[in-house]
Image (cartoon, rainbow, N blue to C red; front, side, top):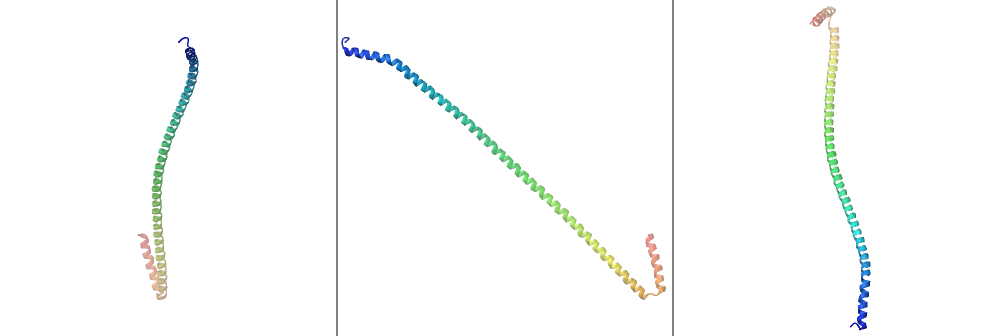
Length: 161
């Protein structure tokens, strides 16, 4: 067996493979380790990016929620304010209408009084003029003097009371 050349070729082949295997294994291992490390770094980087993106998404959703709540609050406040303004406007309008109604009624009453006074004054002046004309045409001088005296006496008694 030791004299067989095939044996020595096989032994030398095995020794050659063993001698080459260790450095090749180290080279392959270090190369694979470097690639594994690079892949792990990339995975970590991607996970960090994913986490940052998730945080950003969560923040955006939170902001969106806050903005929606703020919009709802503003909407409710606006609706309340509009209702208050409508009530105030309706009250003011009712008050103004009532005041104008009272003013109109007062003006109408004043016009009625003025008209009645004018009519009374006109009737009185017409009656006085008619009475004067009748008295001037129908009374004698003596009766006129007696009537004037009687009127002055009555007038004085009315003024004294």
